[in-house]
Length: 212
Image (tube, rainbow, N blue to C red; front, side, top):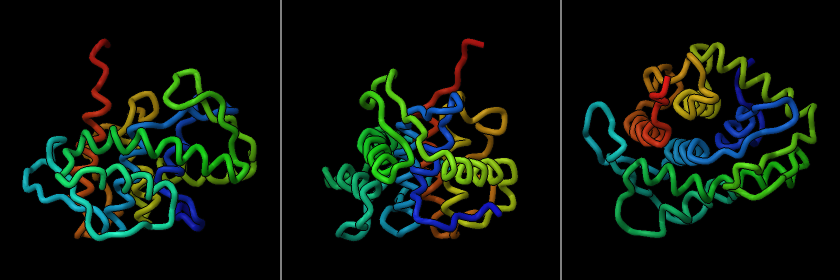
């Protein structure tokens, strides 16, 4: 019931959950960067040599392998990561990758007729208008069920979307967010350390509101 069964990246799944009003989605940013990094880790294209426990936003990420994935969203992330040869601190990777991945996600959803772009990222006035309400309702319902029952999710893609959402902006993450960055058994064991580092970077990009 909560498994992904179509070609939607983790970043696109997260973008679908960034809804503030019935007809629109807010532009994603660092959370979409984290989503793309998690997917690259699951594909074996990203690792972390860090040995710190718990994971830190200063821990680094390193690209593995060469070539492109053929997916616009993931390749936008690789373009950023491969722009320098040195390892990326997780916080910087989440932010810089997010800047490039967000427009790619917006374009991919809009070209498929799911949304229409209004304004330009990173404008705070910009947003995505929902056009294909049928597709959106099916996808958002699937993701909200996964969000409500994360222990039942076994698919690492859906699990990744849920965890990125939990660890992102408090505006959307709600009371169930900001607990253990990895709280459920979504991921292959060999990816856990790398994904923990990615989430440490994402959490650092969205510091808690201390103004009450």
